[in-house]
Length: 271
Image (cartoon, rainbow, N blue to C red; front, side):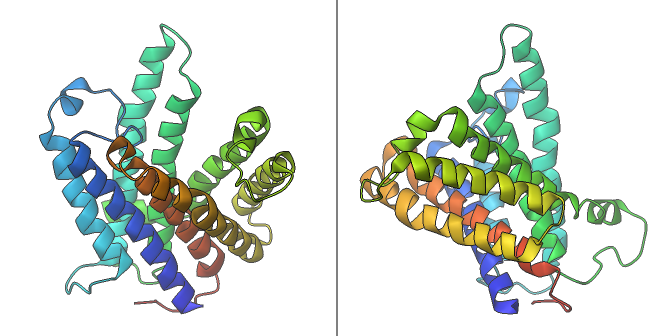
């Protein structure tokens, strides 16, 4: 149980590291990290580079790949969750409001905001995998962030539901992405779409959360192995390595599902 939680943290940490490295490569914000608003942040490459470096350090800390003394990993997760949530509230939502004055924001604009919310939720889920209270019982900003930990699984599940629904709304396109060796691509498109929607709803309402979370983690691991990895190998340099990053983001999603499934059963801190 504890080993699987550690693996979930590693998967999440690797995904955060990948986001940081990619921003160092492209020298601009990934679209889900920051919307085109505010312009001053997007027009100066120093900001995405600094944030990218911060992601790399944060991902290393959360993954536990290297032990860093005197650092409260739970608190790091809480503040990372807050940073992504602030991005949604201060960048993505204002951008969508401004854009809607001219035209309806397209589907990708919404997905970018939901992905940022999912990263926030994932960080809060990781924080919840630590038993100790980082605020020490004091009423401060950290104690406020700890109250957001239960929101983590909800933030995460919203994107899973949207991804699932997209399998029905864009079935013809998504069916073309099913591996050629898998028969009946339309069936698998609908099957995985329904599975994502059901998993998201069950996690939000805490119904059979352990088996559902484990099944979702397994399904996302299959996506990583049989869809994202081949795509990354086929297009390693596209978008400055974006396909590689997308593969590792799928691994990040897998790690979140794994920790959601198991944290309720973990009775002591996993260091």
